[in-house]
Length: 493
View (cartoon, rainbow, N blue to C red):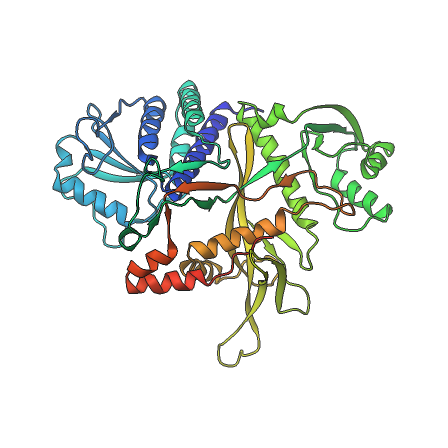
């Protein structure tokens, strides 16, 4: 049963998440137009959604203190940010009080364009003279949207946000971004700025996704209580097939959907046993390029299933599996092995990476026991830019209690501690490692996967930062970080 209110609210959440990625990507590329894009989009969306009359406060006064948008009649102000630190709340509150924002506004909403807003600072107290400080994130907007009685308002806000995003999206294909006009005509003082007129390649964490042109569907004709997945597993075993049971399909309302053609032996066996009845196929573009959120979600679901199938059949010594508890893919520990290593090609030479490791217990009397396991992993989401689909990879350190996927009680702190010491070069190394693992070109003995992932797209930027020059002018503490960072291997097959 369709639930338009929930669908439209969910669509708003999806678009806000994509907007956050666009702003983040532009910031990493050194582009400074993020707020110029962000503020008008949020203004139009919130006005339609909540019936407000927000205006751009920076229109009459550049860098209006403590707020970007405001509804003077309703006395509501909005500060829009994608900064994820709690200090942003304290700074905003101080500015609001210093500049007497309470004269015009009773509420000041700090809207974090993030999946999860930061918590209030420990010593935070709201301004003595107002306005009252509220903090929102993307999920707060979705929750408030789903509670609005006027479904048409939610729909219009969703459509406005989608239309605005169509204008804001940029294809992450290779392109040159000139930050200062003609690089050839500009001379850079390396000793002062660490800049170079040369072009530098920046790598995004977006893996282009290729998929078949058609989606196959079949009606499930099994009696109630009999699961198709059980029949697929039984047929797979009876055929003497090797490897994990296929999972590159999903079931929705009694229909199975897959990219795989029915001529394959496994599906033929299910057809002969009258477990399924094939129906007409349809173009993958009907889902992948559909303006309807419901259809794009179904397509994303099919891609997720195919990614899980791809990881299960990755062909490495150690299994790459999905941990539902940790919401990531990780390399599973192998029985009897306390440290698993894989060798892949580096940019200049072959490199070995440790993909899981047993961490010993150091408590008195527990020496020799395994405290928990550390795993190389990644989290992901499928995103679109125009009509193109991409897998967005977030390198991830997972800590399990059993080496298989069960979350360790120390996972949160241990994972955060690992990320704290990692700099740009290290993170890029993680991304390129996953490129080496996931973006393999099949050979004549290896049948092609139904979906194919290409290597991350490069963005050419000019001017570039000369690492060698920057090290000569950086402060001592940053210089040590840069030197250590430069010693990290970039793993790329």
